[in-house]
Amino acid sequence: MTNFNFEKLVDVEYLLENRDNKNIVVIDARGGMLEENSLMYDRAIVVDWTDISLLGEFGGEELGKLLSRKNYREIFKILGIESNSEVLVYGFTMPDRGFGDEGRLIYTFDYVGFDNIKIIDGGFEKIEKLGFNKNYNPSIDRVNVSSVEREAATDNSKSIFTEELLTLLDDDNVQILDTRLEVEYNGRVIYGENKAGHIPNAISLPFNSLVNQDGFIKSRPELENYFKEKGLNKEKIQITYCTTGVRASYVAVILEELGYKVRNYEPSFARYASFGEVE
Image (cartoon, rainbow, N blue to C red):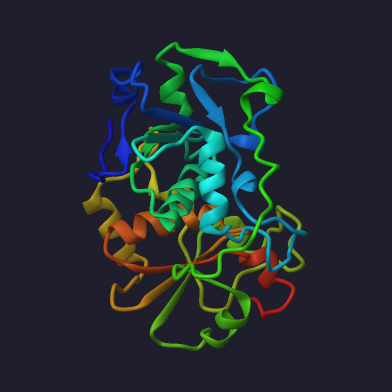
């Protein structure tokens, strides 16, 4: 059951109750991780985080950067999202699978100013049990937004990039959070970064540690205690990072809801590993 009291979080019963609501758009955020013929919710559209971000080479400053609001207005039109729409988004069920892609969509939509978007708590494992499934066909189910000429966001106050980050590494008013898996923090290279390890003095806060074994986001008291145990201070700015900014976005959304001041390092460790010192 859902434990986290958050207006941008609903359970699968909410999806069931609103199955025939024409104003609801359901997004399967698993995107590129879905294999053809995988099961998905039969009324969902598939959107990958790369479909709605600026792209470039792995390790580049542009990879993972948000687009302009103009771009998102064009994308919303293609996705069938209108001003009165309610968007429900899900990913793989954590902690065993998933990368927090649903949080990345919340982070993105928040930038656009679209507030009526909610995560379906528990992920696809819970949705699958409703029985409204179909086999994924990439050519039909993944929405093509390639017609949008992408422009980078220039006014995202919740983001941070490498040049500024490097000036803040020794700032006592800043805490840097590594949201990758603990094994990545400790030096395992999984996704091809140029260096192993982590940003100096970063705190390990794995993105999937924010959910319980049933795949639901933990309760507010559990999260508050966990963050305090990790040494997080609400008076300081939290900078989240992962490999390309997706898992970090998920953590950023939850931290912000709990009253933390957060900025997301969008190019993340894939970029940092080419420039900065590591531990």
